[in-house]
Length: 216
Image (cartoon, rainbow, N blue to C red; front, side, top):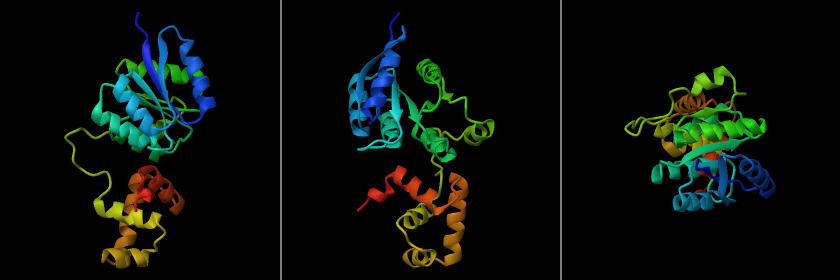
């Protein structure tokens, strides 16, 4: 029986080494390559076409969301299993939209990750079993089809969130976009509701994950 070919994308060497030892101890899987940042993960996955990429969400170069989205576009046959410590619904939603096939928490038992690898390699989807039914229900059906052109948040809502993340007040945003302060507040509230964000800090964190704060 051929083994599942796994690529580990994780920027912490100690964590990466531990995961590699665990996977290579399994009779049905092996680690064929490693990457320490998102860009390296994209390059190696495109070259080697592993069965599963175990993708850390927070990495330099390109984060796990960006790398997952790129792989989903260029080599959709490669399955991506996101590995993160974050339980937030916003992370789940974004990974689903990027095309991840599974989501496992770093703090879960090792057996959880191994089950997830086997599940996504077999063509299924996997969400960490420690997540509540309420959270899972909240993201069910949110993966857009390739023909779905409806935006997750509107362009204007995205503009407002970007400006908030850059530290602009509602009044400053209204002036920049030539809209009223009340309209800014409405866009902000709608976007935060859709993304399940609850504070300015949450908006900034989401903006960082999107790469919005890296723009010139």
